[in-house]
Image: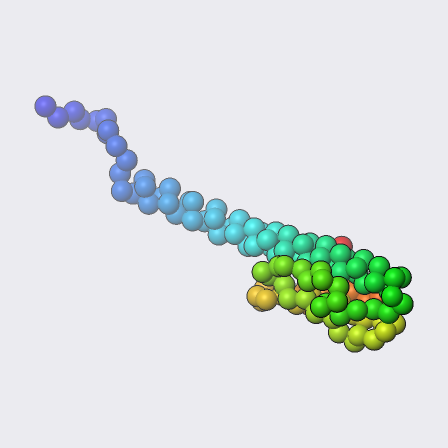
Length: 125
């Protein structure tokens, strides 16, 4: 016997509407989520730059000059940023963190100098 009037399952049209709504909501949330991912990666890189700065200042206090990354023995491990020291001399340095993947706009290259000059400034907030 067949029942009339009452459906026991979902129709294909109803399922397609639900999938479309989920897809639409995902498209709204995904860009915001990727921004948060870049901000989290940047925060980790900033923390590692500050740790390198502390190591440089400690080395300067002990030995009277700044050191390269090999002497500091504190090369950060970060799959999303590459670290280096630019403009190195006995009395000055600039620490650089460069993103390994594009997408973080002006914050793909972060720098920190021996004078605590941070660039780009908007990325350090």
